[in-house]
Length: 433
Ligand SMILES: Cc1cc2nc3c(=O)[nH]c(=O)nc-3n(C[C@H](O)[C@H](O)[C@H](O)COP(=O)(O)OP(=O)(O)OC[C@H]3O[C@@H](n4cnc5c(N)ncnc54)[C@H](O)[C@@H]3O)c2cc1C
Ligand SMILES: *[C@@H]1O[C@H](CO)[C@@H](O)[C@H](O)[C@H]1NC(C)=O
Ligand SMILES: *[C@@H]1O[C@H](CO)[C@@H](O)[C@H](O)[C@H]1NC(C)=O
Ligand SMILES: *[C@@H]1O[C@H](CO)[C@@H](O)[C@H](O)[C@H]1NC(C)=O
Ligand SMILES: *[C@@H]1O[C@H](CO)[C@@H](O)[C@H](O)[C@H]1NC(C)=O
Ligand SMILES: *[C@@H]1O[C@H](CO)[C@@H](O)[C@H](O)[C@H]1NC(C)=O
Ligand SMILES: *[C@@H]1O[C@H](CO)[C@@H](O)[C@H](O)[C@H]1NC(C)=O
Image 1 (tube, rainbow, N blue to C red):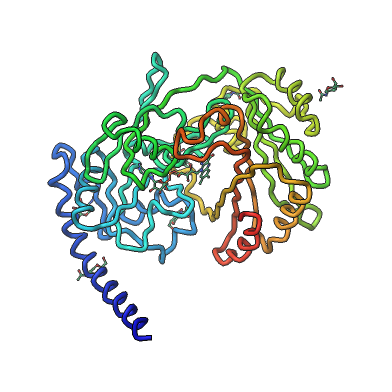
Image 2: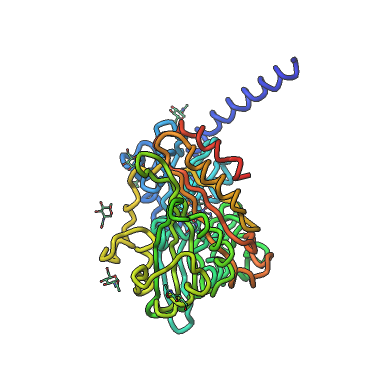
């Protein structure tokens, strides 16, 4: 009992000292910044403290999940919206010397808000201004700064996406994003600017799949470009349980990771309302790096249960498929890819991923459907099952820090309106673990 009391007292004192330390350290942090940045790019233009009138909007611009957009979400003591490499270096050096925690944010799509929330006093190093993309066609390479955004979900940032692995719908042909990274610029904990050669192969290995923020600040990636045919084919077809979705999923599990690597078929089961009750509908969404005329016989031979017809297929340039995957209607101008505010609508998400190493038997699938339907209230439960295989099976397991030799990546997306609905999420846990 006594020792418990002492620990409480200790914690309390620690807490107090922490709070009072944080006030003065943020002031010295802010005072430290100009002396470590390039005078021709004044850092004062990129510092926002709670007294700046635009502090809240700068903070909220890259909060992408409304769960973390509340008045009680912990707020940073300051935000540095780096406009120059020296601003990144100054932030790292001054935070380190003053004991201030840094959160690094690129696109802000972290599923748990880790790029802009902390339980200890912190500052945000916001990378959205550093977003140039330099493409070199002769060498088929490109430099991409961390604050640039991607396709598929086009507000996801290159900083977080690439350092965490980064899968896309061409992974069966070309591997993950990180399998195509050939160099990187990183600011280390001492504020040094490093590239692949100066950081060494260990750090270069770790930042490809191990999460960037654990190791430094990623400024840019150098990537190999990959070739795509001028015209590719996509389809998006649905089957409900009543339409035999379970049998189709069983066949999909047998072929999705072994079929021609030019073909990527994602399975997306979700709950829908049908005739006053809930059921599961499975969407099969695919990208084929070729024409429909060769896709249809391939599907007929390998995956006949889906019954894919010519009218299910749409041919388009690859760039248009980014809009297709994002669910934009045909004819949407490609310029929306440049719109950084397109996902500032309310969005409440809870995501969790796992790997499936052997096909889920029919009874397992039926239990999953049952659990999805059981989730109460107006939740929409959606899963994304992404097949690997192809190029993914050839890349050695230890080539990068990402675990990548497995069969299917399942990602659960639970959309809900209120945080209280966490309870329902717990009911899903049994097949997550
Ligand atoms: C709608 C949606 C769709 C998605 N689709 C896919 C998908 O198809 N494939 C896929 O692989 N992933 C997908 N993701 C996951 C996404 O790739 C990750 O959440 C990614 O980490 C987000 O990167 P960000 O820069 O936007 O996030 P941020 O929140 O800015 O950062 C995420 C993490 O990386 C760290 N970090 C960010 N920038 C840097 C940097 N410059 N240096 C060091 N550390 C940094 C942050 O501190 C944080 O820990 C999706 C996410 C969403 C919300
Ligand atoms: C410490 O910081 C908080 C929040 O930023 C502020 O409300 C408080 O007045 C500060 N205290 C001192 C002693 O500066
Ligand atoms: C925020 O306010 C401080 C103090 O008033 C000022 O020095 C700084 O330039 C402001 N930041 C921006 C980006 O306007
Ligand atoms: C966060 O809140 C602000 C202010 O209410 C709002 O403008 C913004 O759209 C919200 N963003 C999200 C993702 O909920
Ligand atoms: C699939 O192939 C079979 C046998 O060749 C053929 O009879 C059938 O019409 C084909 N189906 C489609 C959808 O092309
Ligand atoms: C691709 O998208 C552009 C822009 O919306 C559009 O003009 C073009 O018709 C699309 N092409 C196809 C084949 O869908
Ligand atoms: C970006 O998208 C949002 C939301 O759809 C829209 O309100 C805004 O006008 C768009 N901005 C541009 C520049 O197209």
